[in-house]
Image 1 (tube, rainbow, N blue to C red):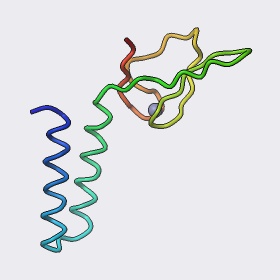
Image 2: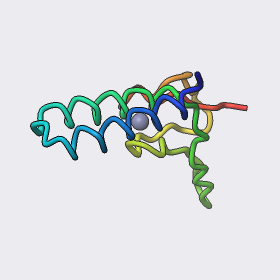
Image 3: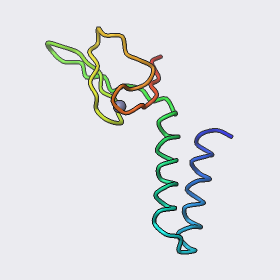
Length: 85
Ligand SMILES: [Zn+2]
């Protein structure tokens, strides 16, 4: 099962839990699980090419990385996985 399908399933569970009146704690747990899985899905950095300097931003938390520095596979600010291709 791919990550997107897992997220879809968790969202379905959230709907069922909501209809059955489960407490907010269950829904919060599902939201946390979805957020954790979403961070495992690689995203491209936002390219901020400027006149005097160039940098990238993490699209999840806006942590900045200079163009010359070695960008890690995962964001040091929030743990988001990057697609560096
Ligand atoms: Zn980040």
